[in-house]
Length: 165
Image (cartoon, rainbow, N blue to C red; front, side, top):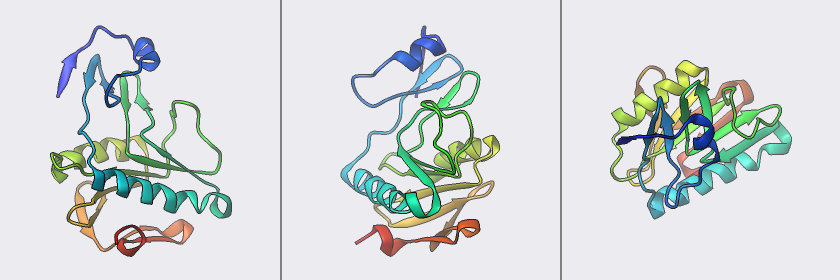
């Protein structure tokens, strides 16, 4: 859902929204799905998993951070993981990983479209996690259900048992 906005990019970047932060797409503010407890719990556990690898692998995990994919397009992934140096306040270079966690009103195909935007931007690992069904999806042009999420170049395997009870 989008609403035409009179906000410039500069105003958007200085605006705090009273509820959930909004994305910015070519002059429109785009609302995001409201998170639920399973969403928040999964987001925290995935973030903690990557935060634990910060020193050993130079990973920098962040949650719900505005990212500039191009002029006029700012998206907010649930989790992003950078490798090497820390990014700018509003990252303009692709992270190593972007993870979207599904909320009850999300559909995997729609989330897949957003993951494709991240992939086209240059994010090598684009994933979705369904916390209710406890499913993992890797995205390479389309979401494919997988049992594990892999970052082979760093020897990382995220298993369902790492985040689900």
